[in-house]
Amino acid sequence: MNILFFGPNGSGKGTQGAILKEKYKTAHIESGAIFRENISKGTELGAKAKEYIDRGDLVPDEITIPMILDRLKQDDCKSGWLLDGFPRNKNQAIKLDESLKEAGMALDIVVEILLDREIAKNRIMGRRLCVNDNNHPNNIYIDAIKPDGDHCRICGGELKTRSDDQDEVAINKRHDIYYDAEEGTLASSYYFKNIAAKEGSMKYVTIDGTPGVKEVSKELFSKL
Image 1 (tube, rainbow, N blue to C red):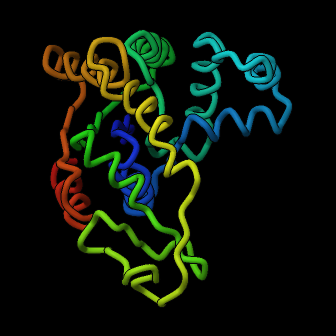
Image 2 (image 1 turned 90 degrees about the horizontal axis):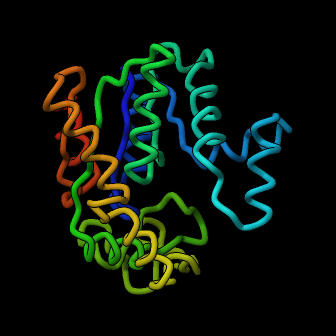
């Protein structure tokens, strides 16, 4: 089962991706990790990508997509994969779709996690990290995991914030890209939604990202 995953920052997409990986024993492929891996290994594509990154430029799709396809062809993806973080705009969606078809790779399911933009921003800015264990869930805007004042709800440890979680300008910039239904990430998601409706070659499912992790997982599993 090959899955393409969409959801705004703050929707719990990474958490649900990890849960899917464990349940279906499928590879969870994150676009950022592909860049880091190619650059660290000194691959030809990685070297080309690094030139753009070092200049502060976006890496062209002509480099990014071959890197992604190479990763999806590796042994751990033979039983299925979950691609997260790409495409981020409509043009990338078109090119990825064409490249997958040329490579004879089927896209089985596209998942879109739905979440109101303001809720997504609050979830990011409300995250609190426990100094004893970063995996202890604490968020001042989510009742189910609201901390005990300034202390971890799990162990009572001191809580801190990540600087990037509190950068509202940066969060808004990322969300501007994601929620753009004309050319941005939502546009790329809708591109596949239209294919699913017209061709029936893949399934397109939407998941309500508002409830807690377990409830979202339950809905997700029921629709796959």
